[in-house]
Image 1: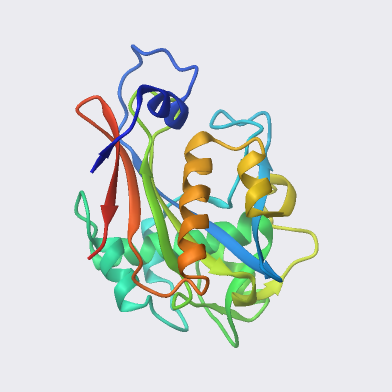
Image 2: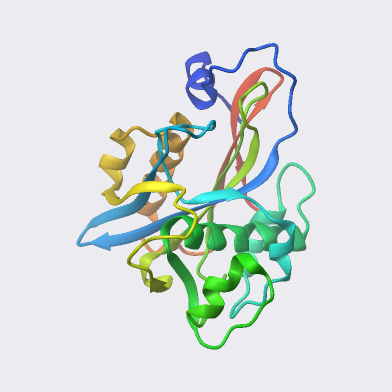
Length: 248
């Protein structure tokens, strides 16, 4: 476990929320880092949050949002890789297999809703869940096998919002359908594919920059993002922001 400096703490959790605000319990959230490759360069999909948002307004982020436990019941074409499933259920707190599945599927759903990208396999798909009807209409069954667990971060206390976020990754080639007009929620604007180096220099949350730096290092050693890699975990422990490692 590596202790981070006070500057790291301030960067990772910077907020204008009063320090005497009532602490909130972090809610599960899932984010998808969608990657593409152009020659020797890796590109990452990012979008800017609207300025009216209370949480990270105007920042460039990955598609993502709060986990819906009901997502665990959505049928899939392929399950999580066993090593990725093991990493998602390891670490601090009780993460059941059902909860891990919901987190992974939430990342896929949010990527459709915010970016209009449907990750999965073409074929008949049926569910009564309203927020998955885009997959029904376009004939895409969500698939989890390609997902990789990249990082986990818990928002420090006394922030506008608190999330226990799992950052997952997939490749652009895993997208079965790409909608020209983007996703139905219009949560993100200015969706762009940025080289990793430029993404780190964009107006991104500092914890996002740290995760991009870690991903860049991992890709340098493992450009295929094979299953089961170690996962950095950022959280506040005894008033110190620490970076731990998750690996089942």
